[in-house]
Length: 164
Ligand SMILES: Nc1c(C(=O)O)ncn1[C@@H]1O[C@H](COP(=O)(O)O)[C@@H](O)[C@H]1O
Image (cartoon, protein in one colour):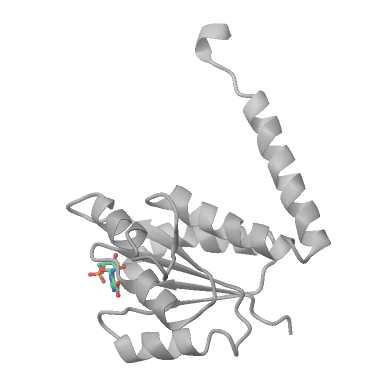
């Protein structure tokens, strides 16, 4: 069995609508991952266990999504040296600006790489994890190059109604 390389965690199952876009990218690139609900607020002991065991379980990156008072990514980063990629999930009342500020404003010394609010951020966090893993994996790098080339081609082929 391929060892798990990326952990995907989210503060609630309600974050899945957003975080599934990270999982879809990992699946597309054939990355072995695990995905689960882990909340710093609601299950702090489980969160500690998850973060403390990340190195020994061989995780190379942790994608952590949370909304509102989004302490999860920062708290995981505080407990493990494994790079944490934070995804601000859109919140009901403040549209995710609260989540973004909670995740991005880490104190000096405990970084969380923070991505855009919502689906684009979730997908980009996974693409970033792929790019990190690709540094040591030429086959994965080739897949990433192909993904980028396809995206470029799709953008070149975009048309506007005014030119039709
Ligand atoms: N931000 C956190 C944390 C945490 O940071 O530990 N745990 C749950 N949550 C967030 O609460 C929001 C509402 O959760 P519910 O929908 O379950 O009420 C979710 O976006 C979740 O990420």
